[in-house]
Each structure stands twice: as structure tokens, then as C-alpha cells.
Length: 400
Ligand SMILES: [Zn+2]
Image (cartoon, rainbow, N blue to C red):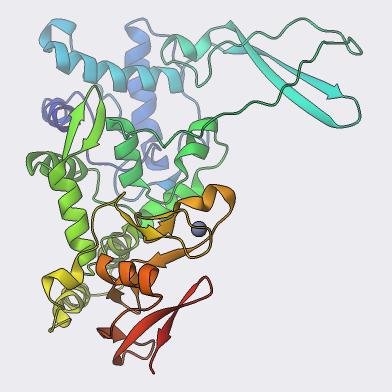
């Protein structure tokens, strides 16, 4: 990404591409004349393109300051570009040609509904592309899928078997999915992957323009590179993996009670966008960030080191008082491994804004109670001390 951004910048400076730091895939209506000219130029060198005046292409509501990246009047000769420059240029150029392709893409779509007795109906969908149209220049969102040739009323054999399977953990982030996550941290990645033929992306644009994103088009690559350079993550075979330093960072932040969730970043991102729109001043925004930082340091009397030790993920803490399975330190709590059988017992890693150290969790499981713990903060922001005890499967305060 880092390299691509540099190349796009170079191509922009040489006049081959439009302004690179855009967050939109749409074009401004004011540019219709200019785009029509560019299309003429591209048609002149032999591509099947024609101007289309469509809201799915020109939409001012989905542009903040700069239109989508497009080629310009100046079409470079292949020899004038380095290999990587050519690749990047072609990516933008081919998308442009696909969008304004003058040939129709003809696809045959099939849908088969299979009814299983009176119990259930399954739907199968197939697509075959008959005439390539724009897909000559960009891969279509879904590959050809050919369904068997059935007639209405045909009977099919079904063979249903119960199957035992294990769920698999989420996939590692790739260069593409990590960038997409930072761009819109609230978008359901799975839904986005399935529904690549999305009908309306207004919600997505609203979120971006409100500032609900991590970094910007211009800074995102730097953020990721920093995390790599700092030894927090590494890129292997196009997937990002967390390194020891990254795990240490996250656990340290948790231990110090510093909230680094995406909500926080989006919160400050929103404030920046308000400055951009002249709704608040730069000073207001700085104050907000100051308040956040003050919040971090406000815990003037941090509990001693061993009182902040939450162990490491996966560490066994003790036996579950409900079902006797192991209780293990997880991401947000010390949780019972009997959850597969329905046990819901857990002890939060943080109660009333105070870290619950693994030593206290051990006490709870072994003795049913902890010693007095200092530094809880009530809902009314009042500090208080207290012990924790087990009340059935619940963890409650014991002020006796
Ligand atoms: Zn249990």
C-alpha cells in the first residue's frame, strides 16, 4: 500500500492520474464535461467506452473534497512507465474503462428452488456471463456458476447427514482487509464480502464523512507501516500477524486501563471532521484530546505492579464454581471453558473501572472471596474499596 500510494502520487505529479488522496469512488457532477473529453481520448486509442450520465457514477453526495481517482487527458505510453507504475496506472485505467464500457455485459442468471418435503426450501443461484462487456476490463464480483439443467417439478435426490464440525477462527487480516477495516471499522466485513453487488453504499459514505474511520487515505499506510516498524505486526504471505511486541502493547494498555478500542479513535476522528466542516474550532478538538489523555493519567495512585497482573491469554486460573471446568484468562474476562456445554460463568477483567488481577481471580475461585481491593470507581465517579465474593455464579461486592 505504501508503495502504491507513492506511485499514484508520482503518476499524479506527471499528470497521468487525478488527485490521489480521495476517499470517494464517485465523480463530481461538475466534472461531466471533463470526463466526456477523457472518454473521447480513450476511445481514440481503441477502447470501447462511451459517456454515461448515471447517479451510480456521478454523485456529489458521496464526495467530500476530491473525486474518485481517474486517468487524465494525458495517456502515457507503456514504455514511459516503470513496471510497477504501469501496473498501478492500469488498475485505475481499466476500472475507468469498465465503468464507461460501451458494450453490454450479458449474464444469464438461474435460480433453483429445491423443496424438501414440507420442511424446508433451499435456493441455489447461478450466473453465466454470455457477453463479457465491462468484465473484459475488471473481474466480475462472482465467477461463473453453472447450475444443473432442471425443469420445474423435477425430483432431485437429497442426502442429509448430521455433521460434526469445528468452527474456525476469523481469518488473519490481509493488506486489503486491514485497509478496509481501518476505512470503515464498523462495517461488517463478512457481509461486505458476500454482498459485493451492494445496491446502496450511502450509509458507508455517511460514516466516512462523519469521520468514523481510522486514519485517512493519506495516513493509513503510514499507520500500518509504523505498526510494522515498531515490531507489533508483520506481513507474511500477504497476511498480517501479531508479534510479541504487539501482544505486550495490548496487554499493557489493558493493564493500565487505557481504552484503545476503535470507538475511541472514531470519536476523535469525528471531532476532526467537525473541525473540517467548521462546526467546532481546532482548540475544541485539542481540548477533547487533552481530556482523553488526562483521563489516562488521572489514576494518580495506580495499584502496584502485581495488582495489575492479569496473566497471559490462555492461562488457567482455577476451577469453575458452577461446572468444575477450567476457568481461563480470555480477552475480556476470566471465563469458564465449559461455555461449550452452556456454562456462562466468568469474571470480568475490569470491574468498576478497576483491573481485576489474576491473583484476585484465583482467590475468588479458591476461597469464594478476595481480600479488600482498592481503587474501584463508582458510576458517580466516586472511588471506593471493597472485596469481591461469589454469590452463586455471580461476582458481587462484599463490604462486610
Ligand atoms: Zn463453568
